[in-house]
Image (tube, rainbow, N blue to C red; front, top):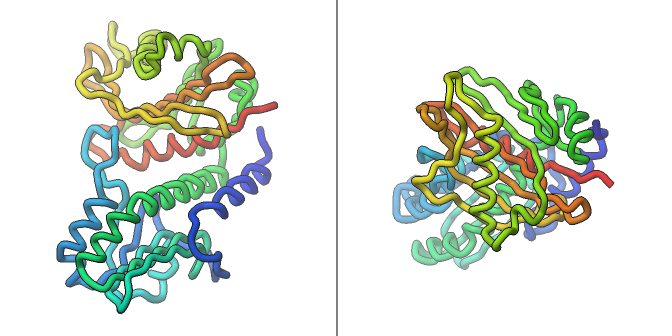
Length: 326
């Protein structure tokens, strides 16, 4: 098991580098707030206007890859006069107001720590909408990156041992409390956390580099491999049922990095063949040139008729905590 202090130090270093705004202020006390929650400080007449519609369109847009619409962030609106006391302690805050000039400012840890604080000031409604359009992607990326770090810090307060992961795959990973090893096989692990109405699952396995990059059809190869793993290991309670990728919708796919290594992120929906179970999944294929392999991390959620955004986000945070051993 990796030393918790070592990983926490690394996470704090990463967090200190998030964003490119004003010089970090001296904060007083710890910030508060649920994961993926953003406080919007804006007066009611603007929140209930075209400006508010634009804010909701940008920061409460549906999350990619979920079977039902759920917002990217949960938005809590506060009038300007209420921006005091505990509201200033929230972890993610966006302040919007009209002023004598149009300006954007990003501060970290102004009133609490950790904290991301953004100021958007404009001379008119149209200028404010224009500035929101220009800065929304930057704000979203900054908040999401910081929320991943915050989630990892919370996981590391009461972690599950990753010793078996280290032994089988030569990587370290932060695992949230209550996750248990459901199935252990050669070069394969299924780790699961039971929920009141379902479960969160994480699979780890590896394949040769050529198997992912064959014919340069990376997305199709990733889906083919995860379907073969599902047929081999992830079965339903009745015969001839196994996990497959939902074919009705194309998966979301992008290139990223995990532990400074090339990784492919694939998001979509899984279902149980010959059954009615289904849910979202998020898959990372991490290229490990040293060992001529792709390490595959596949997280999937089953929580029917319930919210799934934060469950998938929990899996994402754990998978992005991976550190390859020397």
